Image (cartoon, rainbow, N blue to C red; front, side):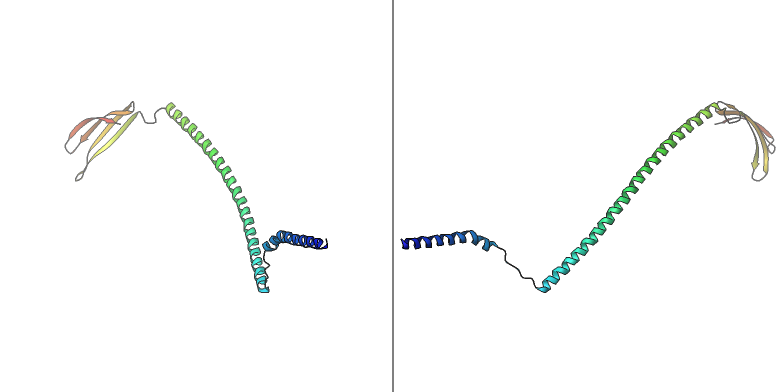
Length: 170
């Protein structure tokens, strides 16, 4: 029986050892290798970290400035839109006022008598290049509708001739 107990004990020990290897071997095999960092690598990493931190601060400042500029631009845009709307409203009002004034002017012009005189009188001189003034004329025209009809008489003292003309002006 003693042999049997020792055999069982050996089998139990081997079984525990196999189970321990089965469960703990993957843990020790899959563990990441440990890296040793030298002092120069540590200094380089520290410098790189400081540079990245400085760049990060600079980018944060630029982002803040950009946000502020965006706010200012948005305010200027909204003010410009308001001014545009106001100017469009003023333009519409001025167009309406101008149209009203044009209508009033047309009504006033229709109600006024014509500004052209009812009778036109004319005096003329007949000029010759060599003999200067060689004759004279006188005419009268009357407004009929929107046209003038008239009569003009002339005398040429060089040729000693008189003439009568009927005139039409438009």
